[in-house]
Image (cartoon, rainbow, N blue to C red; front, side, top):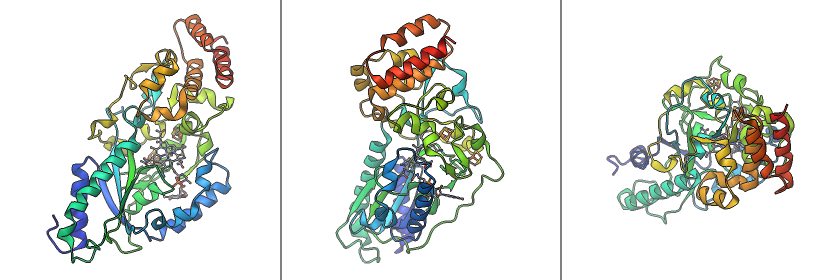
Length: 371
Ligand code: B12
Ligand code: SF4
Ligand code: SF4
């Protein structure tokens, strides 16, 4: 309940409720902020450099990106939130994942429940809590008397989530292009709740100092050299793109560098000094399912399509489909260091002939293991 008749008190109250729901932080931005037009221009420039691989959705709906009020009729304010997802603290400034070449490395955000669901469910809960409080805000000049409109998003619409998070003070954009919070590192997801309350003036944002300084650890560690300049990602070369978003054959030039990463990649974050401040998740949703934080490549390779469907229900891993995941595991097996090579060659051979795309990667892996 707000203690003062002011927008600041309402925002502070909303933030306290967001923290209770498990969000690590929250901030507020007008839907009419000038950053949307600026970011749309930057996006167009980046697209003109042809660094987006097959992410064609980034070319669409620029009118919505530039005018987020068109996404939700009546929305006035974007409540931007971040949620920590780590289950264990990784060893500082080290890519421990590389020391287990026979293990499957799945990006840390993706080992449990799909964050899109968690974030949107929690944001909806926040909207309901706000809605219950509206009668107490009548007459405060925020529009609480009008019909309440809201809509939650998390990686689910053409929205500049990182830029919004930065503008509301949740962090700065690191050279790897992800948002970093000085007290919480970068291992978090972003989400937004659009609401019809007027809580901010149009062009107000909270400046956050960029603390990357002269560091370039993320640029140097990236296995595929995908960070081609500070704040500029060649998305088509990023292992996250190659193993999750890319549907076809993975170019041979990336296969060695992919190592044992079968779904996403955390290297540029693992090496970042600011992740010594990364916090563990406060909600159970990100807890690893089916041992996905400690599973061998051969175990996953042994999954049938039915097992894949059963074990990835409600998980981000569904996104690749069975053949996509097996394609990635085949590459990783080609990069593995098995004690019994013959056994691995034999199980690789077992899946030959199932699918044209998979065959190409199995044959590559068999070639690598027999070199
Ligand atoms: C497309 C996408 C990808 C693509 C491209 C990533 C990218 N950096 O563009 C791929 C598939 C590669 C990807 C990978 C990952 N992603 Co992603 N992805 C997105 C998505 C859907 C859109 C991002 C986008 O618009 N990219 C296009 C580029 C052009 O936009 P941009 O980074 O904002 O680029 C701007 C900057 O370059 C800026 N700029 C240019 N010069 C300068 C200079 C300065 C000083 C600054 C500050 C900015 C700046 O202008 C550009 C144009 O706007 C967002 C969700 C969303 N709706 O926002 C999630 C999102 C960014 N991804 C996320 C995550 C977690 C990841 C991974 C860590 C997953 C993983 N572990 O595998 C990796 C990290 C890879 C990396 N280094 O970025 C989180 C990031 C959370 C955070 N802490 O920031 C998001 C926000 C999803 C979410 N809701 O949680 N992702
Ligand atoms: S996620 Fe991996 S491949 Fe992508 S930019 Fe970061 S280190 Fe490079
Ligand atoms: S590794 Fe260094 S340059 Fe990269 S985001 Fe972290 S602090 Fe910035």
